[in-house]
Image (tube, rainbow, N blue to C red; front, side):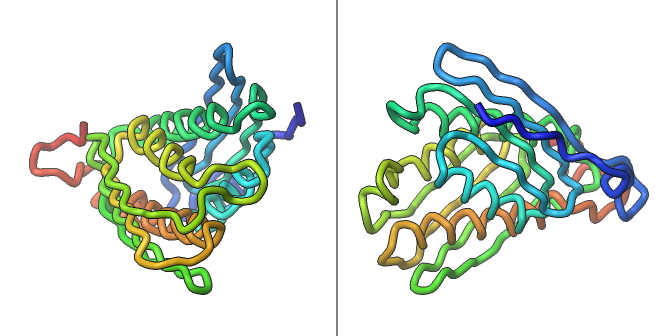
Length: 216
């Protein structure tokens, strides 16, 4: 397993609005995978990903860069047999760290939406930090696989795991595409921008953006 150094430095010690930096670290061990993940929501888009699944690493790079998360993730397991467990479990752990880093979600914008194109592909993602897990995934991938061994269906598996464990309501729509790589990347980039909007601290500080007074 490749070992990555944690993302550290004074540049992530204090957020730009002087509020505490939202971050979380989680380790998950099962008989199928072993995952270590550190997430800084109020980051600069720096990503170090070594999951054993190159296309997943590529998507995590896009997610972190456009959501402006700092993310360090390592994973090992049975990816050589089938990437399914690694992709799903990374989604689980990332969702759990997001939920932890968001805390009570006070002061956040709560809602976010974005379109992202990649050449012929166009995706739309809408996010609600509702505390209620739900994924609507309307994305008919144009090809069964991406590269040699990444099934296109794993894109949905990743986002279902993240939304369920992150307490997010997400609507993912692939509007058009002809290339599965482009389709997946457009989805990840649209989701990243929508999440960045939804997680943004828009204030007032301490106010939970819900008529119920709680997001859970």
